[in-house]
Length: 401
Image 1 (cartoon, rainbow, N blue to C red):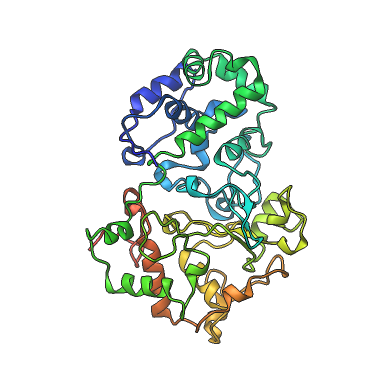
Image 2 (tube, rainbow, N blue to C red):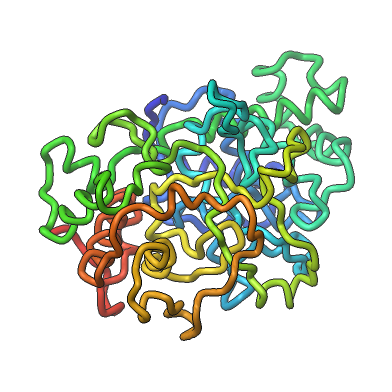
């Protein structure tokens, strides 16, 4: 992945001003990178931050994938925070917007040698590549809500800066065909998403592997549990490289599983969706009913700062997620209670095809080991987001020891 330095925010603002944009999305100084971007990456960067790609010119890619928030959507509060608010200011989808850091490492959608579905963008893998994914939101009626490709291309063509960049990168005839120009815009965004801004590999865990910092005893225990084949088997699904400690580990094998996530009933009361989310079976190329209810295993990079969790945002706290997994192996009555509701864990939204072989592994964990796993997952936070990690008391940001 190409290394870059710092994006010139003034230059970015001028570029967007040339497009008659009235306001640049607020970005933390440390949420972007600066330096030598290629022309295609520069174009993709400008498009990524441009709210002119939405119907009311109020929403950009960065709106739902904020660089200063781990490329996740932190705009909403309460139940509405589970999913992104559309360009019209009222539409709510049914899935949590995935954080897109490290998304460049997701392989194209395919079936591996064992016939298992792997990869692709979105929770159901329906967009095979980053470019395919970037084509989706501008035309989605409950997202950026443009009526057609021609509308977006016409807006781009009206901007002399975009005219210059598009022709330099894609040729003088790029605007002669709306489909080609629209695809080029998506390709440029995908190119920007492959820069090191999205995947710096500089978390405490990475620095630990390089011998730059030490883990606390709690974090070290959590790491042992995470990679253990006797206790948690987290690495069955959340390990890409063959050995623990490998460089550029993204903590996902990008396979699909039904882990028994319950329906987000509070969200459904808001968005009025009445049908179960069938996950992988909703992919247009998938017809096997055994894939119903399966969702792609997400990266755990920045997981501690990109709440809420699961495909429908049903859980608010990372510790709740670990407890949710632990309920399969613990016989303690207290472990059968969702701490966020005070009630027993809800039944799965899709009750068939649950990956019990992967879930029912090892002994149940006590609170100390639960906390240790959470502490280790916090070490997977990129350095520029570490200030977002709450202390155990939730009072002050946590810093490295």
